[in-house]
Image (cartoon, rainbow, N blue to C red; front, side, top):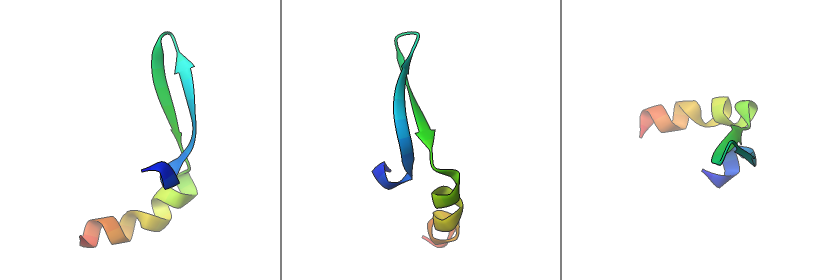
Length: 34
């Protein structure tokens, strides 16, 4: 999961994880096959 995160931000007392979309799409076929 850490490889997919572009950053983490605090928003109204909650954490928001910003995903690296290019990395998610690159790994999506591998995750579907698993």
